[in-house]
Length: 414
Image (cartoon, rainbow, N blue to C red; front, side, top):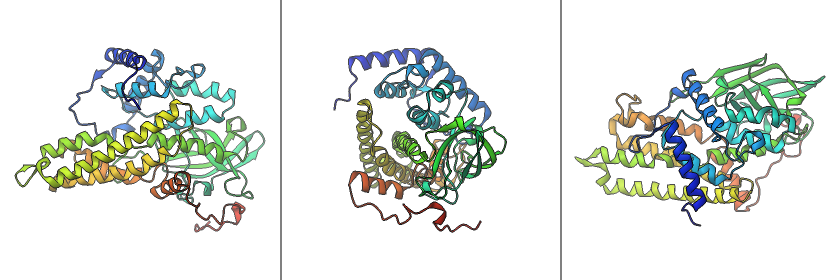
């Protein structure tokens, strides 16, 4: 595999950089990656993110891989990667569109009617509305197919009742995609249906969850007699699991190796700036050995992501590489953060950006990465996927797979 730009990619990179230089301020390459804790949820930051997305869209730099008829540019994955690499070198607002553009847009394009695509995808690409994913439930745990939020047909509408949890960004989103149970008499994977839901509709209540790292990016979302038009159904009745799988496959690619690989340079800098036994910590052989371990893991994740990109550039569906990237990347991020706090000594216990080294990014990361190990599939779920779909090991025994959902015991008291 040749990792250098082709002449066409080099020309595209130069064009992207020229536009960015006219519209954004270059990022200091030696600066620590920003700690965005709390800022991502503020109205001011969200509006700046919307303004930046609209500027990119109007100039033809938004959702590059999406079809032109829906507001994209019809380009390949590699051009999108090149754009992302160049945009990352400039100071831009935080990306609040990871779920919409990375997971829900591709799901809508794969399973939506032409009317739904025309109605939603272009405005999704321009970013003036933000989308969230409504999958997890308190009673389902890691078994998404065990969800209990119901949708009952009533004339031309469906009436939704139930609760979702860990819904990222739901408190500032306009639309959501939700999986519901429409047939409790069917087997649990067969009785599901997928909908687009208006987050401002009557009966939708969003409650932000205060997290251990001080942020409130996740939410509980309650649905009480929420009416959703049948026109907002995505896919056939009872086909929600197949639609949801499309979302999940794209989710694991989008989250991928986001655990800690991107902060390796900051960890090196921290080891250079902190001292151990009166000398820079980076001169300690044990520290250097640990940094080497992280470097090897980072490179493994990088080359695994290249395999994903190669497959996607050929038009293939995201494969198990996304699960591998997340299964390795998320624990690695937590381990890197733990190591960084050890390097800081007593200051590692201070989660105050004003006085802690590197704006307390490692304290935030240490407290936040356990959530990343759950989001988009727990470590155990991902290992099951790798075992069954990559290593071809015998599947886990699932005694409830073909049983009517209403007959499956639950530990909850209703």
